Structures are given as C-alpha cells and as structure tokens.
Length: 107
Image (cartoon, rainbow, N blue to C red; front, side, top):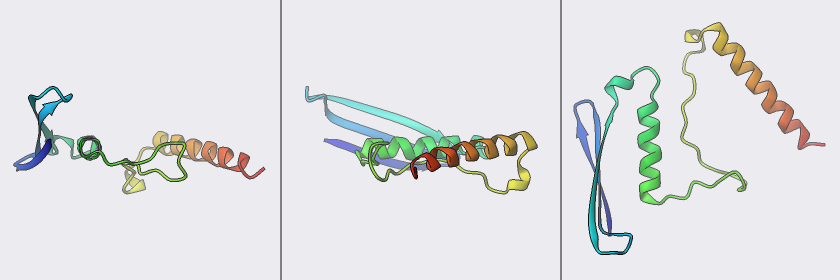
C-alpha cells in the first residue's frame, strides 16, 4: 500500500512516500523529498514541482491533450509591470500564435 505524508518545514515541505510492496514484489521503499520554497521566492518552480509530484503520487488523473479538458499546474505572471520588455514581446508573440491556431479550428 502506498502511504504519503507531508511534514511542514521551516523553509517548505517534506514529502515522505512509503510503499510496502513496491512493484508487487513485497519489498519496502521509502522516498523522502524536501521542497524548499524559501529559495524559490521569485519564480515559484518548486511549488509547481511539488504540486505536480503530489498529483502524480496520488494517482490523480488530470487528463491529456486528447481530452476535451485537462488540468494543468503551471505558473503565470503576477504584475505585468514587473516584466521586462523582451518577456512582454515574447508573450505577445506566443499569444498571437495561439490565436492563429485557434482560428484554424473555426474554418
């Protein structure tokens, strides 16, 4: 049986995953991962990784590209004024490309 425990830490979260019968062979396996949120204050990648890993560990089906809807765990910009002009131009280009793709589905 798979058991997942989360422990708060001063700088993030410790995730323990215990499997008492890994691969059905009856062997025990313990995995301990520390997610450090303090060192990730700017880009939040460790929070996205933590939530993605937890979803995978729990076996939650989030869908895929072939489904009508899928759940994604991602990060987005906060205050647009804190972005540099290159990032904003890249975002505009990406959004224009996404609009073009969506318009092809209307034809």
